Amino acid sequence: MNRFNLRVYGICVVDGKLLLTDEIRFGMKMTKLPGGGLQFGEGLEEALKREWREELDEDVEVGEIFYVNPFLQTSFFNSKDEVIGLYFFVRLLGEPMGIFTEYPMDFPSEEDDQQVFRWVPLASINEDSFTFPIDKAMVKKLNQLSLKAGNM
Image 1 (spheres, rainbow, N blue to C red):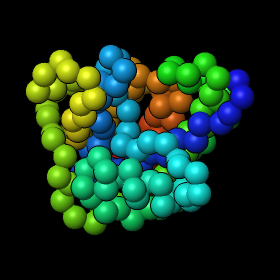
Image 2: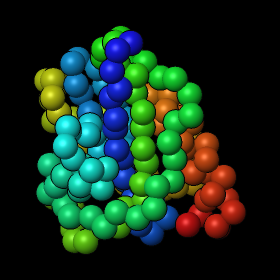
Image 3: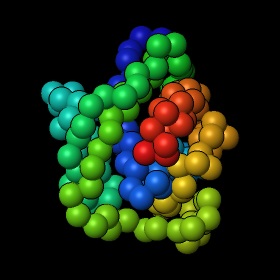
Image 4: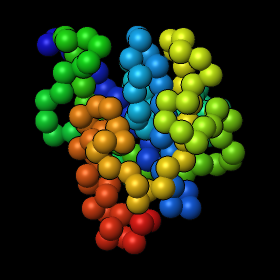
């Protein structure tokens, strides 16, 4: 490994439902939270806002940071990258304009570079809801918080 790949993601819970995104990238289907990579010269909050505008045509208010992976994670897409995932709570400032579905991986076609979104009851979210190890670790902590708070 010879570089860091910083990723920022937004945890958005509305009416007890968490916003997830299903994507097909590089021929791989994945479920994760909305967000993406930090660009050089960009702050964390700025990157997260940019990602939400790009993905959902939505402005968000970025809240406190919730989780950063404490373990080494090599990128699934580039073995030279060490991935550091940073998860922030976000609040929608309007209505998101992405493509919304009710079912996992419900894409219009099987072509590459697609993205859809779905609201999933927080109570039904678990490690198996996500594709990548950092997301799986994050959701354990989120579920603990959710239980303490009575499902947010």
